View 1 (tube, rainbow, N blue to C red):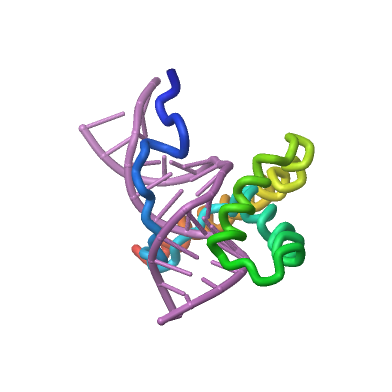
View 2 (view 1 turned 90 degrees about the vertical axis):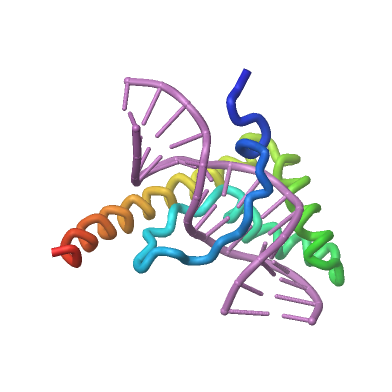
Length: 100
DNA sequence: TGAGTGATTGTTCAT
DNA sequence: ATGAACAATCACTCA
């Protein structure tokens, strides 16, 4: 069976803000792009619903989409990830420079 | 070499 | 300003 079943190990992941000096932030996630577009549509159809509703509703329909529908989001996620590769590379070089 | 770990991303909402 | 559900991620680090 898979190691990480649902999300990861099963820990209530806690949100943590910055932590490193030049933290080479990772790439966004498909959900981030999806939420970017859905937030307008979801909130537009539910003018007045609170984060509790939107947040959950958003996640539900996020998977409700077909692979093709998530494709454009995953596509951006992959592109964003590459973006992270750049900062991570710069973070590596910069780190060395500063270290020196 | 392989494993998993943590860190991060963005929305909305409230305080 | 931040955190919290919602979901994905996935590159990094370590022995």
